[in-house]
Image (cartoon, rainbow, N blue to C red):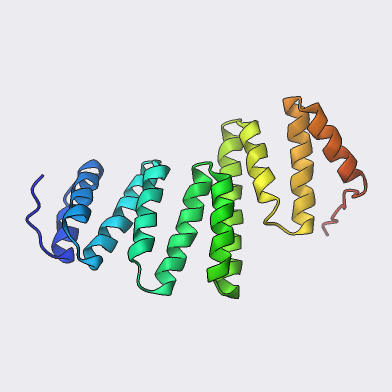
Length: 194
């Protein structure tokens, strides 16, 4: 594919006329050809979006990482961190998402930490819904095992009760017995609705 465009605006205009897969090919070529940071940022951001929309999360992660490397402003870097952790969660790399979160916390202020934690929990809950819908209960347990570190006590107990139910459904006797013993000291608190 020949690249005749020279500026970000020209590249952006050309991509509007293309299908998604042609855009991907074209933007990958542009990101390799041009050294202008503005063009690279545009290409990496668009490629990450396109790959995410096609459920190709590892490719999207690759371009988010590259975008993070060329970001100038702190806010852009924070947004890249958010997106990186969200994509790691969607692709099932929960341990890597946790490591990225721990590293991100060092760089963020209090408000950004709170926002990041909220976005991570939202991403985990979305993953739970997706897995429950497709009846992948062992996957739901993995998500809950990682989510439990990001929530407060009341929510943590609800998640543990859901995990107990899932352990019993899946026939994981040892885990269900251990969790049942742990939950014995925490009776279910009923909430009255008036």
